[in-house]
Length: 464
Image 1: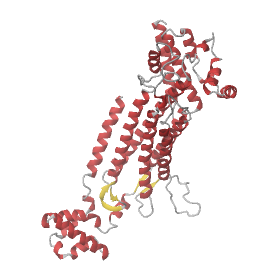
Image 2: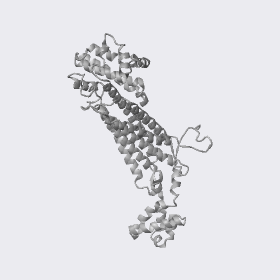
Image 3: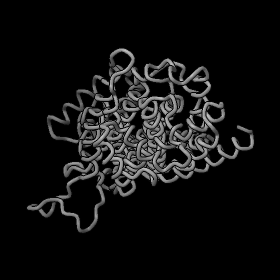
Image 4: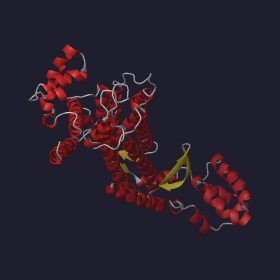
């Protein structure tokens, strides 16, 4: 084939691939039956063009195959009818599709390759598209979290450990932990994408290139390049499935991250805490018999996704254990589609929850007083440490705190009752020590640091 014709054909293919990529607005669309068939036709056309460049098939045949590489030439109803006759999904698709081709070009379709090469590469292309969509969703969530963290950089609240009031923090600091975790998940998914990019495959029935001729390795290299993928792995990965398993495991981790956020917001919305609230439409009903209830919906959904997505991941990880060169692993593609769609749904729920979250600073501040100042015990201990020693101060403040609990006193009242300790602190010093708003450590600066780090990474994302 002459250079000009090769360039023209490759340019035509690039235009088609770009259009197809832009058509996928959702993960669900990527895994729709006709989308999958379009990926298959794109793969067959890429193979034909590569083989034409190598002189394996005629250039006119490659041009006709590429011209007809559209699902409008392979309607689902006709494929279904053909499948009833041949009982083979690839043969049914190819039979219907090649009937549309002129001059016998169909004789050169699927030349030397095997079904598993085509469908595994199609799956890789689907997962690549899904990953791009999920990364965009995660970055959208990142922006929503940045906004929430900035807004509540200084909003003081109780920091809780093991379900107990521990020390004051800010709500922005809490959100910054979500931000950091979300960014690490973006990076994990970016790493998986790199491996998916190298997972296009054209190695034949047992992975040794038989049937593809002496130029098979060059054919594979050109084939994946036509599809916009990177240089393929040299090994026959059909039987190992580790990259697919890694993809599933990363989605499992992401689900657990959002399960944590959902669980936390579920608890913060409880009547007894009431520090946040999920905003719903005015017509939403919380209970059929209790009009006052505002039941959390999206936090609960995130918790459920965190249970179901890891279970799907387990199925996909189990598929790594195969027999000999290849088991029939095509059914796992359904699980990969399901886990991808579920993850997209989860991220959409999370985004709508975070964007519409109502934060209640006045409740947060009131909850700081629930322990009667006990939450400030550490600060008082540090103030006394310079006067009576750290170990002594810690032991004595433990006794004072217990005295306050036993006698239903505030910590300040109990401290003032202890004449030995109270002589070391003036009333003005106690006023300052028990002002929780001035005891949040570097929480606001921590929010600033996390956001600055993530904004820099977002700039680097944009350069890729």
